[in-house]
Image (tube, rainbow, N blue to C red):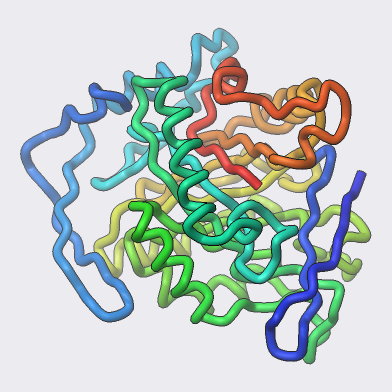
Amino acid sequence: MKNIFLSTVLLLSSLGLFSNCAQNKAGSTAAKTSTVAATVEAKTEDTTTKVAYQPIDKKLYDSLMKRMAHADTTGKWPVKNTPYPIPGAILPFKRVVAYYGNLYSKKMGILGELPPNEMLAKLKGEVKHWEKADPQVPVQPALHYIAVVASGDPGKDKKYRHRMPFKQIDTVLYLAKKAHAIVFLDVQVSLSNIRTELPLLEKYLVMPQVHFGMDPEFSMKDGSLPGKKIGTYDADDINYVSNYLTGLVKKYNLPPKILIVHRFTKKMVTNYKNIKLHPEVQVVMDMDGWGEPDLKEGTWRYFIYSEPVQFTGFKLFYKNDIKKAPHHMLTPEEVLKKKPYPMYIQYQ
């Protein structure tokens, strides 16, 4: 089930990083908004500017959520009794298309595999493909950066994870600005925990363009080493993150944060019905499994479609998806056959 690799990086004393790719692993209408705007302070490292966000048109929001359900007749989608987001929400008005990885490793994803300008150009091409495949939904490009990496090296504190230096996050922010992209900071806690790692990234999460991802695969609550087995998060862990992000949004008058939760097995996320939703946070359950199309379909059906939370994501692997017959990575047109429509797309 596992495809684990160690990546040598130029960090401190050549720390060993690894990432696993497990096999079981709105158009023009969106422009309709009220004339009353909410103003927030957009914080960057060295500047603070005022940004106006339009309040949510609830009628439009409802229609887009219904469209997102893609004619599902089971009653699962759209998820009932979810809160309307505060002004500035990205979903479901846009679809996010993200490149994932780490700048220190060419093996952890497309984000670090190619030279920056080439990577951004390739991302732009994928954005255009998605816009063509579903012209009713605008596309928001994104860079999804692994800020805390599970490692085969225990490190000084024996937590088997390494925190990336802030200067590298700054580089990702710079690249994202060039591409008019938002940023996700992803955390693989390993033998640490989400309550320790999340607050350390607050200086970036107070920026309106920065969002968050949490990876249960590398949350090793039983003390196992990362990669030896698949980790887990409970609804309680997800609620902690959601509450934390909600607090930042309220304190700094920010637009809603998007929270990505990776998933490709049932035990990776337990008690999903207890996940609490907030107007300040948009939760995406991301189907993070690689393999042939039929395998990915099963993963989607059993662990994403059947256990609805709020929004869904779908991950595509340039290399691992084509390892086995029919040696084919799904196209945007094929992914758009899913119910509901995934609103977050990640390429690794």
